[in-house]
Length: 186
Image 1 (tube, rainbow, N blue to C red):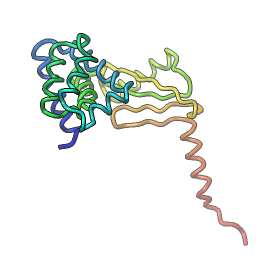
Image 2 (cartoon, one colour):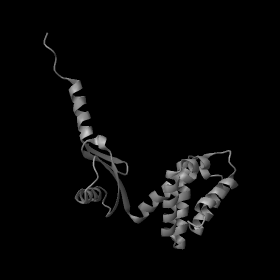
Image 3 (tube, rainbow, N blue to C red):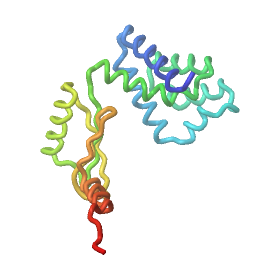
Image 4 (cartoon, rainbow, N blue to C red):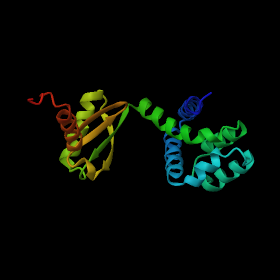
């Protein structure tokens, strides 16, 4: 079974259990911390994927890194994952959990890339655009700056992308000019 599929099932189980016990917000904070730590620490990601390192060693490292910082439910979850030899899926479980949490709470996560940092007015305009596109009232914007865009923006909402950047328009123009529909005179 693929890692993504496994991650989806484990994330769903953790989400349901946390909701049932009334600790969903705490577990969400735990998974935020876990995902952020994995994102910033390549060595930890590689360790979790490494089949040579024993499972009890991986659990001991997870406890050393996250012990006291995460809830009891999350610690028990790490124990179950390591007992089932699924540590390599932990990276995907964190991401999938956050995704399923957003769906459950009706939050739309969108990523906007611009050439310069967004002003509050532009941020409000982009948020309004995402609300109109999705119909969801809660929007979380992840902002990135890429000076290579020259101007405009790229907006990613789910699996859709709106590219209204100057770079894209220039590339489109270059392709139009390269076609050259005119025939030279002989």
